[in-house]
Length: 493
Image 1 (cartoon, rainbow, N blue to C red):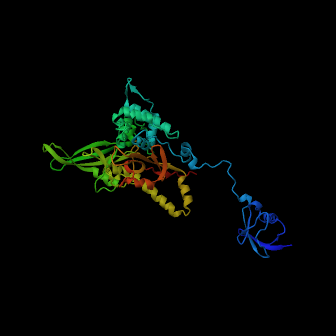
Image 2: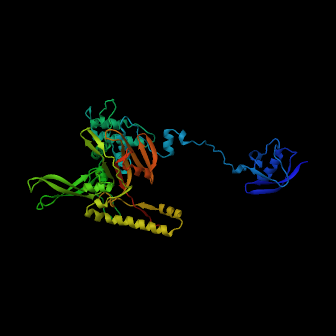
Image 3: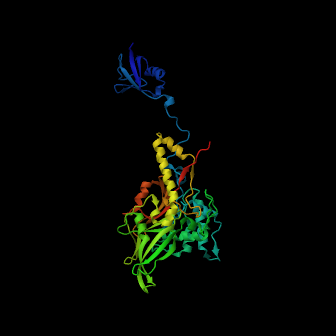
């Protein structure tokens, strides 16, 4: 009878002196291999010089003594167990399941050229102090008499209710907010020749919304005590002034009369303007150019119009700094607000120190020194700890967030350092056409593109590409939040 002694190679293992009888069925040989390897016969694939062994007969497999046969297959315990719950792929998920899986916030349905409002609402939603103030607002959609609306109260209540509904998950149409906005500001309800709503300027919408909230959201209680025992007293009437409002120290000097003494004053602002000229390539230089400008006004000394140099320095920085890129200008010939497409770079981390008055700069210095000390200590720790993973874990544990405001001025910024948290962009050639989108930071390097009801994850790199220079989305309004200093809590014995 044809009896051979062969070698069997299975993975890294080699079994010499395996006896095989070709008069018997191949299944008996496979049973032998199962005894040696633990691989079930149905999982085995036995090969010799490209020929596979069948279960019924030996076929063309020509065995001889000393030949090496190759076996492939995995033991049952090494094979992954089929999950009891069938996996659900992103492509098969509905909108609600997708939002939950990716931890995406709710989008807002476009009700016909209402993307300007949707983008504004998503950007303002990133300010936790504003959200908190809205939750405390108890007013309803009030009407004065039967026909006319109380704009500030109705818009504030509508925004509060919209944010509450958005927190529940899936995308929704902002019907009530759109209706109250149209009643309060009829220009936003203008219809096009096709019968739908006309596109509006998102920056104007932002300004009007903030102005309405300013009237109805009272200032946050300032009785907060800092570590040094100083109490914060609110000088502002509204949460908006507290957290979005800054102050300029201004000086007017007449260029044409050296005898006329300079006039000093103060001006409040809720946003900074970045003017775009041919030589402006960066946001910082666009902001700085506005800080020193020439204006013409009546001179009391010369009794005629004269040229003055107006110098502005920031004497109060708000926690949240809104920067509007002045991208639109009125073209009389076409009677439209034409767009400046120029590429103007903006940073993810912004330092406003240079724009501040010397008095404010000296107040900002102690906190800035603390930021530097903290960064130096992290670098030192990085050098001394070889295992960077362990170092990361140790930094994450037991840290506390230091106040970002001055002890006597709740809602201010005490360092001059800011981090970008939302960008409102425009794509198109004029403010009354095109499309607006909000880009908001979720956490770390992860951002969310809120394109009406479609919300998708993007990176910081994608956000930095929004600086302009073509027909892609261009940054129009930026919202910077305070950079928070996180210091380790000393471990107590």
